[in-house]
Length: 301
Image (cartoon, rainbow, N blue to C red; front, side):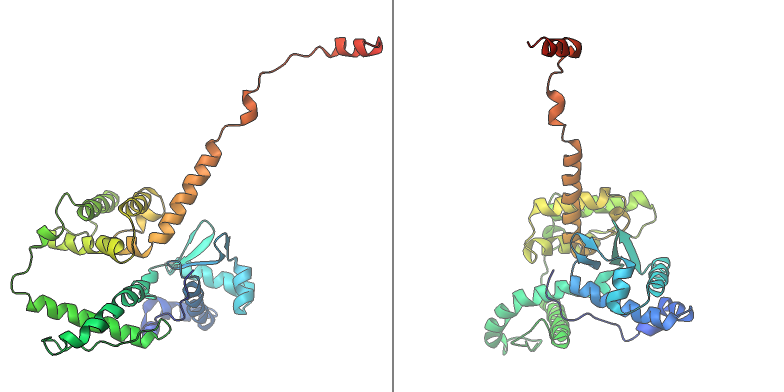
């Protein structure tokens, strides 16, 4: 679990239809507060929205009620409402915040930590020549959410300026060839999504597929995932009954990567244990004449 000290909350949170419906219920204001507190718990766990005490011990409603200071009945009712509204999901007894990436920007943090040092070193040399005049903040700390969000906005502006300044852009088809690893992963995920729902919204044009390819490329370049690991997570995501209905883009695949890998390997380990033969079954059976044995003992043999 990472050391994340903050989560993001939208200023329009209480205008959300689900939150309004939640607050209209019995103990609705308590439920809304519990929802925010669950987001903070998931932030502390820092595992793609999963909520647990430890890796092997998921929270029960009583444990959550005790920790957050509510009656268990209130917590049970709140969790039930969250599930009905699609705000939380349950997997192997553990709760998970739906669409966690809306509340936490782990990718942004990782990207900033990697790029800030390089950009600061080069900034002074390029500042006068840059047509965009993008100012780079020298220091970015993980606990300062405001600076991080500003830095992300600046980086986005910088990328947009670069795109405008490129006179002869490289064709998108040349960036990720059809037989390249990234495009193969994208096509595989698209096929899985469409097989579940024929009208699913998936990229059709090459340019749209490239957008999905970029997340695979970032997994390799920024997250330092190997192609074998990415393929393992993808194969699990499109075959598991729970995840194949939830991983419907490469962005979500990247966000849930660690959870997918851990659950994939845990599932494989459990299967191996179940299939391990009983080593005692291979011993030959011996026939024993107990009557003859007793008679021998009586005769002092």
